[in-house]
Image (cartoon, rainbow, N blue to C red; front, side, top):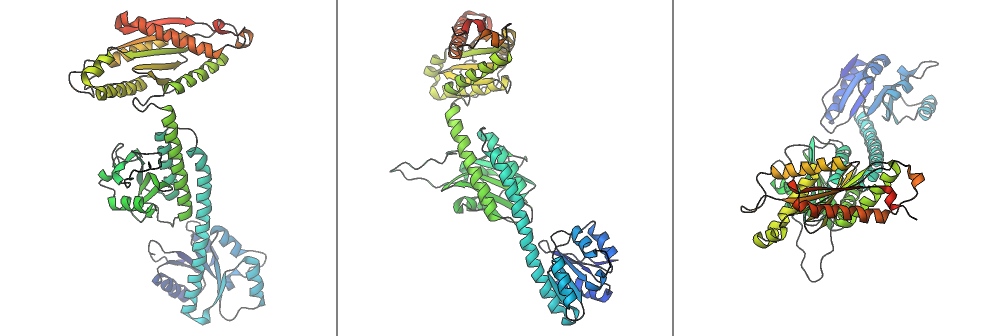
Length: 485
């Protein structure tokens, strides 16, 4: 029979008392509940075992007389059902040598003599709870460290800044829990550049952090954190100013900082109530901030800041890698070169700011119209180069038609009135798979392949100025043309 079960406060602990004396159980459960904890009582080992099938208390208090069973280990069975819970034995009278031996063999935490009164029981329970708390914190720390060790490689793989922030959101949610949350990056300086000598550095403000990864509609992507009504701005400001975690029952804010730079913020609504290891969270925050910096530096090196597509050098490097793979695997590769008609006149009439808006809009549209596996790069000025993987001459033509239709159906252009509808010229060139195996052909001159394929696509683009719809399909080249002698 189970007795007690008094409700405990949210941060209290729990104890199961196993004793054949109903009066002792009732009184002890009441005392423990008065100290802010939850207590249950079981009058025999069977009732205790049944209870432990569904509940796991933080402490076991067991009557010694119930454990007298020849050839059996009833205490071991109970402790297996409540792993890690300290055990206090109870009896009347001082412990004898038999009890000392039993305590050594079973790692007993303590012994309570019922004749010593209620205060003594309270002291034993309080001391055991301290041990239970420490043991639980050690388990949580080990678990968090395992999570951190698993998270770090994922954080530091080469990926975009947006992907890094999505990864951070998932990992911080595993570390501290929460119903919903977001990760925001510092818009003005995600790298954390050193201050320029002689210039006064402005303090970091929360309106500089933009939501980039979120798992709830309450945190719209692109919003600055000071605009989020459901997030207390004073907590965000405190976390940024002090560069320290702010976690309570309702909110959790982790500043992702490297040295004096807070490069990002992680926020979780209603984090889990267990105690959080400050050192583990700090270590995670530092690793997350380093991942943000690495991703931002990677983007600076590979992504064009105006159009948000890849830079020319990175695009050509990806083309070299793609051609090497195509040579081994035997699939076609097509290039599509595109530029904007009368772009110089557009800049002269409407200004370079409008010209940049046009380039940015076109870059975003190009990425929407191709597959994730394809590469979109800025080749220079108003020219773009698309690498279409496993696409033959017909496939390249389909992509060109798709781009033409997308441009023709544009509505609500993001630039001032008076700017004409965007017109482009598109040329394609293809390198088809050879009928002969690569080993029989020999090793090709890959730099020559890149140069020739780009030249053909560029020439086709200029031919497209006089072609219907501004599209011209260039030749299909063969690997045999590029073999090293």
